[in-house]
Image (cartoon, rainbow, N blue to C red; front, side, top):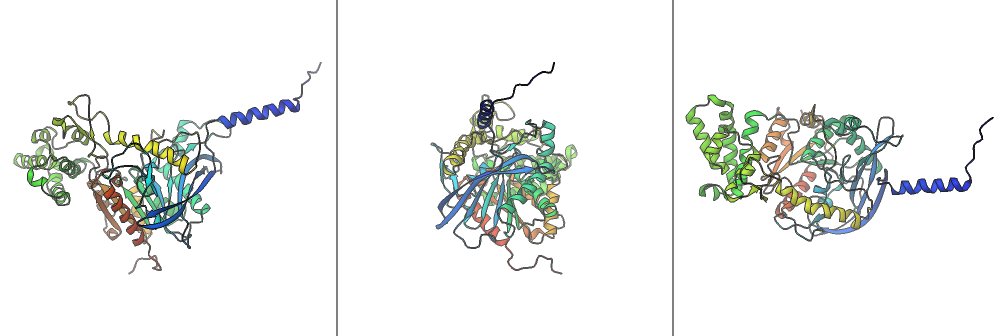
Length: 506
């Protein structure tokens, strides 16, 4: 006897469809390809500026054209100018890896910034204010959140399942995977928004400098997109080796800046302006400290004692501590040691910040005083701003720091890639910006990067460095917010060659 099958009635089919739609509607998922546009006006450098803000998502596709992730972005475009197509475009990335674009977005170059005092310390109640120094007067800006940062997310496969962790790492979470998919994404963004004729600039902060250094070559060689400028804010090593004696010695100028700020130097040094002090310390570091460390345990005793004494004078530490460290004082120990007698620690990313540990003994702080303060203020500000002012509403959590680890750091040739991009492109200029009180990516390491980026010296006229009296996010301090944006403005203008041919003269 054959079995009979009961057919679904129209009512059952309708109920099933409604249930399916309700389940889908209640899933906590980001829209894959979506945008919201709002219109705004502001004042920048005393000039009235009208602009649109586009918040949205744009897919990342695999080689077969399937959407495997979607990236959240915010795109600011000035609307009161006639020639939109040729207007400069700045593409902005933060670092981590795993950090959202929030930091430079609402504290540096964007038209709106969080409420902070003149020295860059957060003020309650937290919120958003106007940025009178934004570079939006001279360039449009897009802030990009890599996979798993901000609202950006990995997407489920065709079976409705998340890719395996190893697959995600292969696609997104590594130096070269990150550069590859972001180059493709930027190509799509530029095409969709008709920006191929625009002069283009990349800006990256912290690990974002690794990202944009690699992107410079990837965009040129794989996307045929040539840049006018790359800005490295608080740069990492970008694959340029500085180990051993160089790594240990290069910390001293940062130590000196921090000790000067906290009044821990002798009267003679303390009476100097920071701009007068640091060249002294840099000269000693290059000509005395690196050679001394290179000699190791075979250094002459008298030379060693002279070096220890000068290190102590510049760092604010005792000669005994430096001797016990074999002239190699770690940054973590320095953050704990400098103000130990006062029962305080200093911040990692900005050593102007003070912390309180459970115990005064130990060789590193319990926490990063500056980062907890920043997360306190940036998190409510960005969540409020995107939802209430830019009208982007979603139940997805905004990841200030997203799950991207373990990160594949192998085969990091991003510094060499940037050098090659510059060699291939006579238009391409590079500017480095660093805060003197940044202990994570110290300013003297940034200078060292610049010196060794182009060993030939044939392109050094296209490399420049700017230093500021604040930390990793040097733009938080009001005076430096103004100065750093003005430096960006001048850099952008200087990198627009007009009708000049893209060639090297004989």
